[in-house]
Length: 386
Image 1 (cartoon, rainbow, N blue to C red):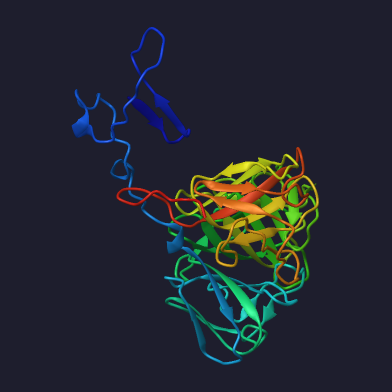
Image 2 (image 1 turned 180 degrees about the horizontal axis):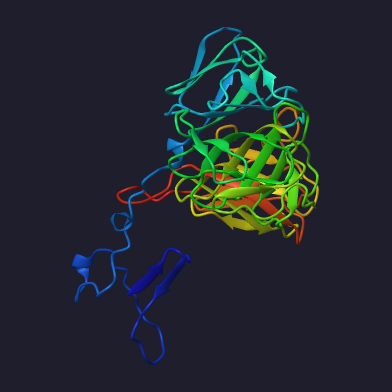
């Protein structure tokens, strides 16, 4: 017989054999074919024996591509849900990344590649039941322009007050527990911010909206007072004026750098079937590390923690062939790059295919966030690599 431990990726073959020499083996996949039936505590290796997923990544995240046509009230559809968070980027030209969410309203825009203040734009008309509605304004639907819209579902715009921290926050938390969108007014000085998740976040980024300041960010694998800035590709630094301690299950610990003013805070954590965050160590080779995240990803963000490097984003909508080599840098307003960084998407994760400082320097730690494509389970087929 065999014993499968899916949590450890172990398939153990068992037999009561003795002596030496050639032996024949028969693979039996139905319990009805077993002479003595299944031993106690064992089950058949088939999808019906797997738990049924309660949520799939496609239920809460989608990538939509469209070409601008210079019209108003244009619906970009195919999400399969009403999104709450839009990350929009022009692919074939220079233009800032636009971050818009339902908590602040569709006219309020932050730019991940800029330390500037919150903008007011008219390019996004509304979040719709199956995607977004865009207008011909602020470079969201220009003729000859190709766009990518990354869409997350949170809580249909419904927010709640959170008093877990010394500074109150207004949070919109996804029911699946993988993300929260928070707005707050900081009093100035070291303080704590409630994030609303059921566990400690593994990615945090905070941006002041009413004054120019960087996107102060933290990822799992970094130290308690370490930070990076989303609007630059600099390596991580240590400064207790930014973060004073690791995030907890209730709060993010902010330092004195968060002066009196208005802020937005985005937090993400790993949830089975939805997303996974973690770290890997580079080996500097084209035969790079395999990063096992437990599912086939459809969106991958990687940042060099130990050195300089862009916030590199791949997805399986823009790039449909292995290896994926079309990427956008979230810290730059540049057009999409179509060569130079290579990864393979696997059934259970991804594999680095280049020795490059942004993805795979030998001995260097990298942080990543992935969004699920689909996962296997009860009566669902096995998921192949891309």
